[in-house]
Amino acid sequence: MVGEGGDAGWAGRRVIASVGFTGGYAEQAAASADHLVPVPDGLGLREAAALAHDGVTAAALKEATAPGPGERVLILGASGGMGTLLVQLTHAAGAHVVAVARGDRKTALVRELGADDVIDGADAGWVEQARTALAAAGGPADVVLDGVGGAMGAAAFTLTADGGRFSAHGAPTGGFAPIDPQEAARRGITLRGIGDVQLTDAEYVRLAGHALGEAAAGRLRPVIGHVYPLEQAAEAHTAIEERGLLGKVLLSTRDE
Image (cartoon, rainbow, N blue to C red):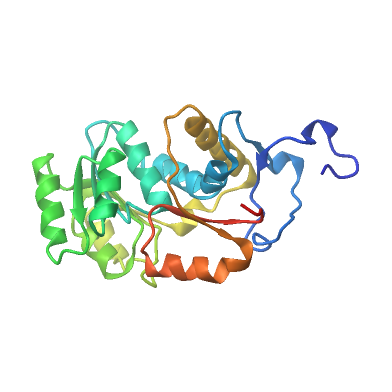
């Protein structure tokens, strides 16, 4: 539906938009026309929904940390909605990807998506396994993309090369990785956090358009673990907290 004074050309078009931190669970939402991002032909609405936030944030993280050809990238939480996208984006950038996920199903998925080395984070020796994989590729991690946080993220910091980049953007364990900024400064490591991917409306539209375009072209695959009806939002949150699903969890307002 187009509001009064709006461009009637938007009527009937498939779009995504960011509606901020409130109202995202409403059955209907309003957005300014300059906040809308058209969904390309050939891309499903579910796939577009899976990219509406994770795809944008993943693209922003890739831009911020700028992994390049031959660099070593360590990704924690690699089997989640955003982690699966980061594996694909960093692999496409020519980096050597060492991905950490938990369990056989998740590690198999991450390897399928392009990770060069896959470490099972449920193994007590995962840090040394990751260190060995990174060393075999040439040294410590040039970039660490921490989508887990807590003690696991802190352990990953020890695998970061001096002069590298560390992004502490994930906290499903209950808190972001407790990194000492003075230690990072001493080692020349650039620290980034979730605040560095709080985007302006214009940045959101640009990055969302890029993510949707890559998916429509078959170069980026959003992994959808499960779709819940809106009235089961509580069950969806429980599933996310239990970390048993692969990829992205979606809520739907449609009867399917």
